[in-house]
Amino acid sequence: MEQRLSLVTLGVEDLQRAVAFYEGVLGWKIAASPPGVVFFDLNGVILALWPHRDLAQDMNAAPGTTPAYPGYSLAHNVGSIEEVDAIFATVKRHGAKIDKPPAKTSWGGYSGYFSDPDGHRWEIAHNPHWTILKDGRIWMKRDG
Image 1: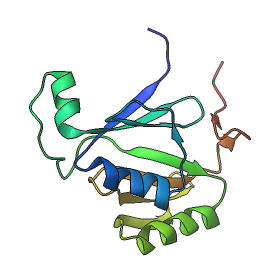
Image 2: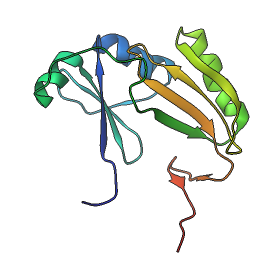
Image 3: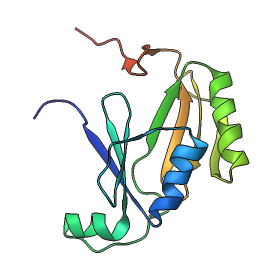
C-alpha cells in the first residue's frame, strides 16, 4: 500500500449544519458531490461529510456517539501564530467549542483545539519546523 491518505470522512448528525460550519465559518468551497454527501477538496486530500446513519451503514456498523476522546484529531497548519489566533477568533465567534485555547507547545510551535458542531476535534497549529507550500501542502524535511 502506498504511503498516502486520500479521503477523510466525518460522520455528522445534521449535514446542512455541518456544511454551514465548514463552508460558512471556515470559508471552504464545496467540490462536486453526489446527493447526501458533501466533499471538500483540500489540495490532494478530500474531506467528506456524510450523515452518521449512512456512514455507519456503509461500514456495516451501528451508529454511535463521538466519545470524549476519539483517539484522533484533524489538523490544519498555518504560517504564523497570528493566523492560529485569527482562526480561533472566527470559530469562537461562531459558537465552536474551544477544547484547548492556543498556546506555545513543547515541540516549539503554537497550537490549540476546537470541536466542530459534531464534536470532531481540530488542531490549528503553527509549526516553525515545517514549510507550507503555495498550494497549502506541508513540506517536511525527510531523513536520508
